[in-house]
Length: 307
Image (cartoon, rainbow, N blue to C red; front, side, top):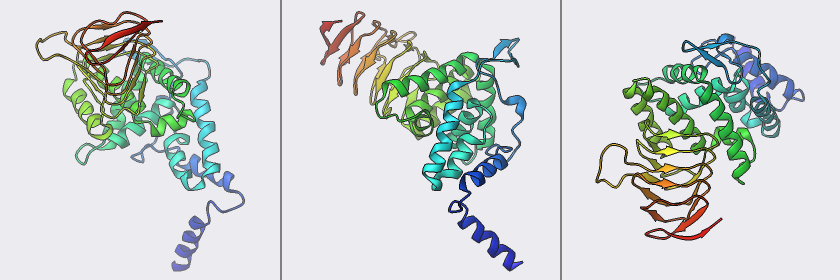
């Protein structure tokens, strides 16, 4: 028995050094592909085609086009596994063991946001169900990945963003929390908001509406209020607040148009509109409406040009 254990241990130590490393990693990934983070089997029925169609609140399985981003992420993970063998198990469990982007994301969020008294298995089920059921969220996830890859020079790959960019993960967790909020599951939605705030230092009320193609760059310190609305293709840097003035109730937070860029530390307060493709300079305090394609800087913010 002792000899058997020693041989097994020696094999593990030499696992990645073997000349057939790539083959062994592939076999290892196939082995763990049958399990979720809890060790339960991933039902292939839960792996979904891109952009499933809703019917009576259910996703109808159908033939669909190849999910190019998910395929690219798998290729990137295999490349990084070869490049950094020490991370092989990490990439296998995070990417290569999953049948879909939704499953991988649900697992990543569950691992990040679980607590001692809220298991990652339970959170995995919550996230996966929400992601599988909602084609709009599926599209938004992919648009966000594309946006970060295209607009953030620090992003070297889709997998790099998916595993390491907390702004991306915070945004996807919010998408699930927002769905729960709209479905009347407010307590669970607020729990997810709180966990995202504690883990990622990003505080987004689950009632806030966020579009697609969003980049939260660095993300630390971002605060977004309950009635805020953010359009598509918006970039928000760290320490930005989309808040209220504290003087009114009801609809009290900013409305951000498509293509807006908000610099680090900017504060936009009140139920005001920021026009499409406007730019808000770092550290600005915006209390009045900003027209489309304008640039605003300063405290209080003033217009310095139109594009």
